[in-house]
Picture 1 (cartoon, rainbow, N blue to C red):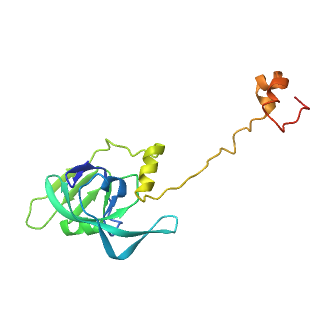
Picture 2 (picture 1 turned 90 degrees about the vertical axis):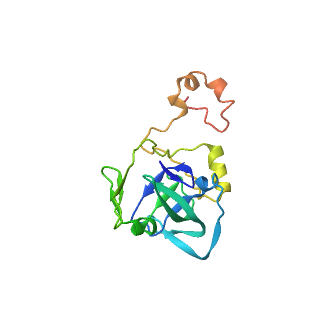
Picture 3 (picture 1 turned 30 degrees about the vertical axis):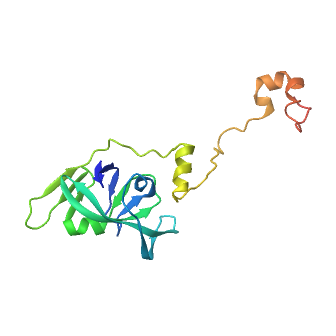
Length: 183
């Protein structure tokens, strides 16, 4: 965990992101004002579409290995991490990332190297409760509803349930529209 604005946060260090982001869920717990951007930023997604980002939390205090840095965090509707620290945050501090060992090193000229070791103590869950999802949607997080069905699984029929098959006169009253023959 990395403290952001004096609150522990699950953070992804990612040099592929031009900017740094904070989740709207995490932002709801902070006592920090949010500003509108003068012009929106379009964040490209893997699927080929994009998300419009138009709010920023300015001058957020981030502590990496005891070293305090100030970062502007754009508001992004995400659930896997509380924040993503991108190139705008990593470049000025000459950050070196070792993804294999989960080490972030700040190698600024004239200062001793500072090393922070991450741990995978918290694994983001892909499943959330309805109440948490409802609160996130109310805070403008993106929401997708999906229905997943295993097409390789056997389809259940009336004949596959022994109780229904053996007592058709009872269950047919509860299953209107089902054929009486063949049971």
